[in-house]
Length: 232
Image 1 (cartoon, rainbow, N blue to C red):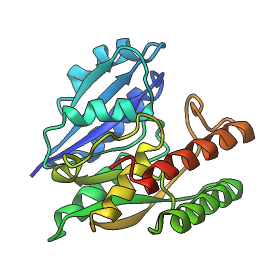
Image 2 (tube, one colour):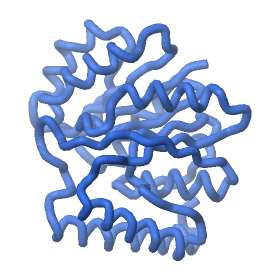
Image 3 (spheres, rainbow, N blue to C red):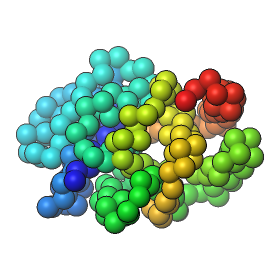
């Protein structure tokens, strides 16, 4: 039994040493591989990976030469995953790599196919309200319980992933994955994860009200496609 966890990295050169050190503390005898996707980075991500990866045998990298979206980077990593269980988390250190091991232990102890997903704690009131509003909309519109969709990590059986068709290349991938789990009657299990502020860098999308409005419009457009059955 093995877990492959994909970490999409877009200009995360400063965070990579922290990510790898943290994973090394938690991955002891665990049968886990970490796939760091250099998702078209324009900073020193490639140099940092080349220098550090030989020190961490549990980790390897996949290169996406030109960034084509958050979801695209994750999907390229999932294609290379060897685990019976696969999934992803973010590279910004706002989700502790130790939560990956927690999620892995949860899924190992389940006798049925399940989807393990974090539930973020410690966020600002504004972000909580925004997430609550989006969750209410998705739940009512799609007719499935959908909340805190962009929480990390995400872990599920590889057999579930192999059923996907036409997954999105942007941030809608999280919504797509949870919706598909609900549609396929796969139980979604949530567990609490702390969500602190970023240590280095800044979000590539959550940069203010204008960015949130753009995210809302994009999510609504994708939700319409999901409901119409144009994506499965």
